[in-house]
Length: 325
Image (cartoon, rainbow, N blue to C red; front, top):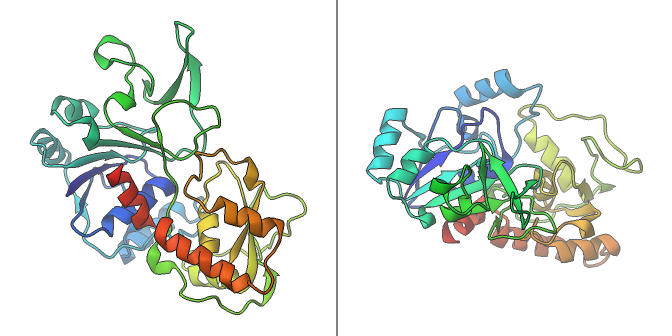
């Protein structure tokens, strides 16, 4: 299968990057990047690491978990070659990995005769949909970027175009009151980083770094820099619990880093999460452990979470889910 992965953003998006990581690890799948900006930071090369440090070290943290993880070949095409391959229908799937940000080559894709099942939009924005009322006052319309919506009916006869009429739309943050045929999607965790056993716990709570936590959460002054992922993971692995919460959006890489390192997340106010957001997350199990911390069966609960992650929350599972919908 040949996939054109379109992501013109100049900085990472965890949802898009999770999907990219998973696709690159699926056998029989060739992922072509639309520009040099697409996912250069995903590759485990010294050139990519140097570029990351120069570009993001101060503003984007240390690049843990998803970044600098791929050792496979990079398939990067020129603009002219991409246009030719779109027109020749060389690609089996066209994925707009940050649909809320840009829809490059859309006219070419539409005019080349791709079917609705061949075009995929991914919206990993921290916010839910931006709404505005329809002129007829019957329903509201959700804007996804560049004047495109997900409710208008006919691109040729309206000023806006509905993604639902030409493709499948995957949204990370879906509000309680949303109507429409939109598929939920979540961040994924690389399966190769999942621990195989539960390490001995040295303290109750993981020393936390971050912002926006409630006042009662003790925040560590320690910051893990570029190349210190193993140190960060060890702190999680030695802890029984790791605090996490909704930040800009409900989905957050920290949730997965806690589970993947053999620790139970304490997820603040998880019960308020909309049902279609974090839909594939083990909400009930985590809510149960947060309400009553497991004692003698602590390791059993962690192993259950690890097994659930392997079967549901890896980047490869995200990729398979998107291709199979």
